[in-house]
Image 1 (cartoon, one colour):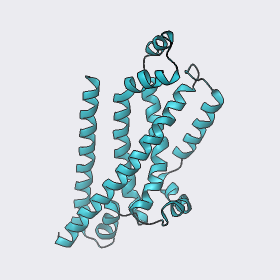
Image 2 (cartoon, rainbow, N blue to C red; image 1 turned 180 degrees about the vertical axis):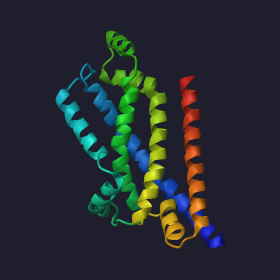
Image 3 (cartoon, rainbow, N blue to C red; image 1 turned 60 degrees about the vertical axis):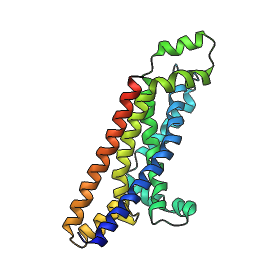
Image 4 (tube, rainbow, N blue to C red; image 1 turned 45 degrees about the vertical axis):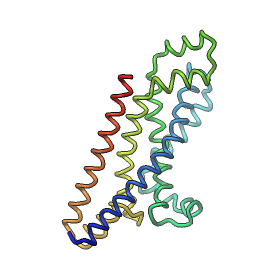
Length: 217
């Protein structure tokens, strides 16, 4: 590849990493509380509330059921309202975050549900309130699963960010479409695929190592 294409590849990689990390952080900060809310308001939960649980679950399922490419287009007015444009890296972060949040919420919910009920009952018996149970039992005990789920979410976001490149979001997907597909630059397409594989493998490796440490703490 020419020096120009190499610089474009590096720039596109940075844009993909930025989109993935920014939207991943939003999904973590918003999705984990949603997952906790689903667990604590479920039947037998520490703050059982069927109405809230069903309503929250319905909203999460509604967003999860919409294919990302459709959500990407549907959220263009909201994206323009938030960042002032519907094109570019920062514009893509809005739909990526909204798509990833309910996805991660369900993953976090599964991990939190696997916490030993006996530990929760023990803290209750010692006079622990709801926040104590969440802070001292639910989150710490489910942490390996929460981290593993977040790793999966980041990997999913890499694929979604590449898809967002189809409508001018920038990143590796945009580079592959503009140069690899439209200009028939096969070497660019191959380079993008190799970089995406390396990026996914790197994130998965880091996530797995962190989960191993948490499992043996």
